[in-house]
Length: 423
Image (cartoon, helix red, strand yellow):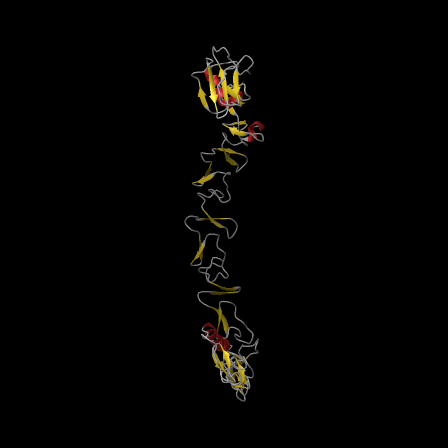
C-alpha cells in the first residue's frame, strides 16, 4: 500500500474506533440493568444503574453516556479540550502539529508532516485535496490517484510504478484497458493481440487461444460464433446453419425423422409427421390435397379424418366414419332402437330379435342385474336397477319385439300388445 493510501485510510479507521467506544459502553449498560434503581447522592444522576455527575464526568457530560473526546474534560456539563487543541475524530488534537488533522479536522498530510498547521511535503508533491480526508501530500511515483502528476489517475487494475500507470501481472497493458489475454474469454489472444478477441459462446480461452469443448468442437455463426456439435445439433447438422425438420433429429451429421413421426412434410426444413395421427397431414402430406387436412373437430384415425366419437371402417377411398363399430366388409354397424329412448349398434339388420340383441338393448338402457329365470313370459329377459325394471322379449315369445318398463319399483312385468317396440 502506498504512503498516500495509508494516509487516506488511517483517519477514518481511528475516528470509527473512537466513535464506537461510547456506543459499546451504552450497549453494555443498557443490556445489564441494575436489579433496582440506584440511589444517587445529591448532584449525581442515575444512568442505567450507575451514578454520574453530569457536570464534571467526561464519560457522561451534560447527559447520560455522552462521553467527551479523548483528552477532553467536562466543565459545567460541557466537554472542553486543553488550550490550543480541538476535538477531531473523537480526540483532542493540536491542528498545528497533527499529521492527520493539519490546519483543521480530517485534513491529513499523507506522506508529509504538519508544521504550524500546514503540510510540509518534503520531497513529495503537494497536490490539491479533492475532498475532506484526502492527503495533501502525494508521492507521484506510486500514488494511483496522482501518478506522475497531480490528478492523473490510473485505470482499474493498474498500479502506479515509478510515476507511470502499469497493468498488474498477468494482465497486459492494452489501449482500452488491462486484460488477461491468456484466459479472458472476452479478450483472448497473445501479448501482441491487444485487446484480443471474444471467444465463441461455450468456448474457453486457454493460453491465448479460443478452444471449443470436445462435446461441441465446431464453431458456427458470425464472430464470435457459438461452439456446436455438427454431429448432433439439429440447428447445425453436418454443416453450420443446416437445420433439421421440426421434430427431427441429427445423428452423425445427418437429419432424420424419428420412428414415431417418420414422414417428412412441408418445404425445407419441413416437419416430421405421423400420417396415421397428424390432423394436418392425415394419410399424406397436406400438399398432396386438401382432403389430407382434417376439418375442425375431427381427428386423424389411421390416416383418415373422423369425429372423435366415430370409428373408421373400410379401406382406401371406401373408408367411412361410423358412429358405432365396423361390420365385416368395412360397412358401418346399424343403429337400433331399444324402445326406451336409447340406441345401440349392431351388424344385425333391423327387426332382429335375438337373445344377443335383447342383451345389447338392455345394456344401452342401464346397468344392473339381468333376470331370465322364473319370468311369467318366456323368451324374455329383465334388467333390474335399484328403482326400476325393464323386460325385453325376443325369439318365439308371445311378445317378441315389445319392451315393458316398471318405474314404481324394480318388478319384472311382461309386456302387452300396447307396450312400445324395440328392434
